[in-house]
Length: 417
Image (cartoon, rainbow, N blue to C red; front, side, top):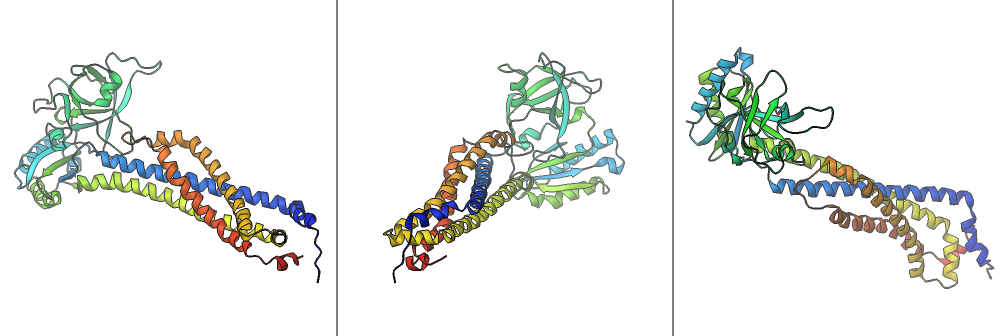
């Protein structure tokens, strides 16, 4: 039985179905958008992962191992300023006698503990602020003379605090490197002064320069910070920091016993090791952010695979007769496979281009939100990891229906209406 087929009409008829063609264009754009979105989310996830890894590897800038911290709130037990000072002095003296204790310090706040970090409004001497501004708000903490040694925060200029930096003595402060570079760039800051804006405060003289370290998050940019002597202000809520020569957690019971021996009614809170605080505040939260963003990217990629597979399969079903004619006149299965796969590849590449443009557009905001001061330039490496992965997975999604098209029986396909 002879089969007469108008080859030109059959091959062109698929392209002239205007409603179907319009719907197909809409589906093409949707798949491209899915590819672009999954690429953007995966790019962000890889960027964050590499950035957080670089920051964790660079260190916190202070000692985290074998440190126990314990907080107190004497005001709940009816303490006033002088009585609280006596309690803390006694506590520190007795804590130093516990077996295994290397050093002890007192502080109003701890690094990576965002709730406890203080803020001070200051006006550095000689610094010219923009019009309409006369001061700046900076992070701060009240610490004693043992704080820098206990947490191994380097004093790179001048000195740390002494026991003589007490109430009634000239007010002094230690500032970090970022604070010094911001308000006295290229100058020796030892002996410089600033005024605390709130209240009737005298000038504060800078006696020491401390090394920068992380304060609230591992992805934060270098932050201005000021340390004040604990003895020069009436700070009731403080924390004790105990450095151990072995397991810091093992000091919990002996330290509690010391507190109870001084005052059984003293409220105790936030008993934990510095390693736990650093891990929960910095490492765990960072991992959570990466996992959430990465999960969104993976979900988007799965949707992309489903969408691309469905679209190519739909396109093959619409072109079954055309493919049969092509094979009847000599087209090989390999040629049909490449023809169909090319359609999926064009969609994947279109989505990747859209994703790269979108990623470049949000790059500035991403780096501003996550500065990663110790991380290398992540952009090129991130793209080299993500783009080939997305392209390979999307091509695999298009390969299955393309292979099915290459196995079409020409006679069966030509007989379809």
